[in-house]
Image 1: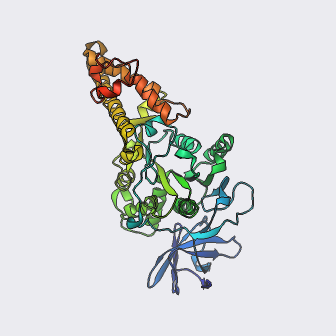
Image 2 (image 1 turned 90 degrees about the vertical axis):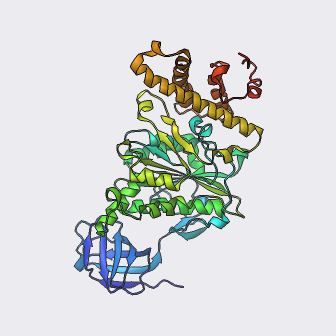
Image 3 (image 1 turned 120 degrees about the horizontal axis):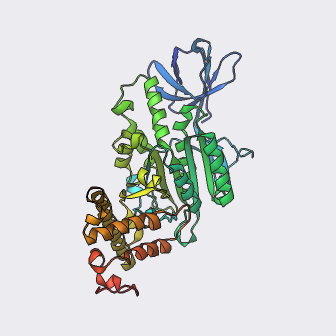
Length: 461
């Protein structure tokens, strides 16, 4: 069906980025609009609400100087779409898909509407294979699994974007299967934009990546589109081109702030801390586009990154995200102050699909026991560190002093990588090297049979 454009002269009113139009016919959600005012450049907009009397259009440009009564609004009949295809690999775009690398607009292999739906639960395949990120605290202890949604919870000033760039550069699929990364940056600075592009080009990661960058100078409303544009491209690569795709979205806190701004302009009743009551549903419409579909050779995995205001993990954004996703990786401010990079706190971090990702054979069982022992020893060391602030290190019993030393070494030698990539084999060996420093009585999660495989460990000691 050929789209039919309709032109309307004069709007009822405007509020922030929203334009309220009366008397529309056959308006559709997501329909593109063009707003013209004499003497000013055209503005783009999109229909976000259709009612019996009022149609709401969100304007994707600056609204200063826009007179609603003098505006000419054209409803184009076309919904938001983006070009998709393998041709886009190695290129960078704005948050709405406009090239920003100086090359012509891509032809692609088709156009797809960006308002995709969540995967049908009856068509989902349970995730079973891991994606190697090169980060030991993730690969070894919070394994990222194909088709999973594993967010990274950061705080203001913590290097979440650097960790995102590191994952983009280092991520690999096992067995050298077709692999691509789609990076969607939401509300980042121009400086960060330049740093990302230079870093990806220098490392060669750009060749297998597609980058969508929404900057702080771009219209706030575009932040609502960027994750969906990125996911639409990722869905094509995963479910039509048969590739394993990792989608990194940063920073979703900026997305939620834009959502709150639009809700306030529409005078909606606010929910927790002023965020709209439907924010849970809106975030789910993004996260639930990840997964594996029956009959498709590819997969779509998400690593959304968000900043917790005031480091508050109970804030509505991380709280709702935690309900929808399958775990979280939490960054720690104290580790960052002490120079640990990446500053991942493994104790509150969790991957609910880790057991599925590491498999069900004997090697996977040993990996689980290895991880449990590292968790237990590190947790004991953290408790000993708190106790040492009260009674002093010399006042601790021998077991706690050993655990305290283990915790210090664990942070400096296992978590701390300073940008260097570790394979899964190297991650496991780094963990065993630390466990080898503990006597047998401290290894309460490791059976004797596993210790016999370590030639320099006496299991009877």
